[in-house]
Length: 145
Image (cartoon, rainbow, N blue to C red; front, top):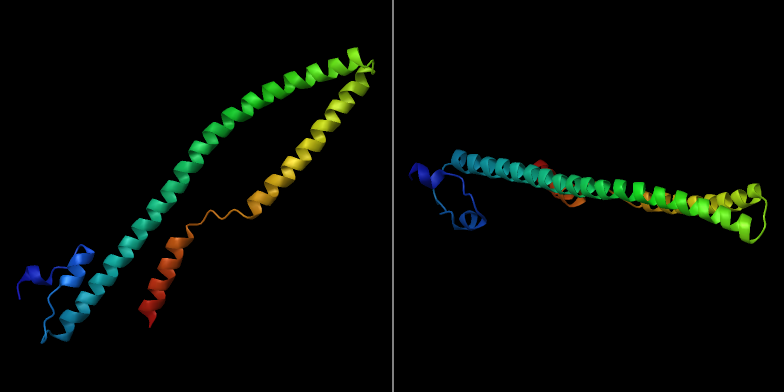
């Protein structure tokens, strides 16, 4: 056997195509198993890193658009709130304090409903890369046996 025959395979095809040595010493077999297991752990760690990076990138992109949306929405809501309060005062002849009270109450109720909805959505959100974690658990459970 040459040293290239003992080199660990780099692809799945090479794993299945490795020539079986019928009289290979046990130490060579054990070292091959250990090297394969080490490579598998490294691949799992790389997969975990990649999965986490995708989540971070998506979160950053969403945060950027969300920040812009918050600014634009805030300016729009302040403008419409002012216009609505003045509309109630001038067209329906409410006192100015009553107009602002009605508008404020409507926005308060809307804020409570949206806050509750946000809380419910976040309760069901799981940011962990569960597929990779489960794969690592299976790997380490197998290694213990």
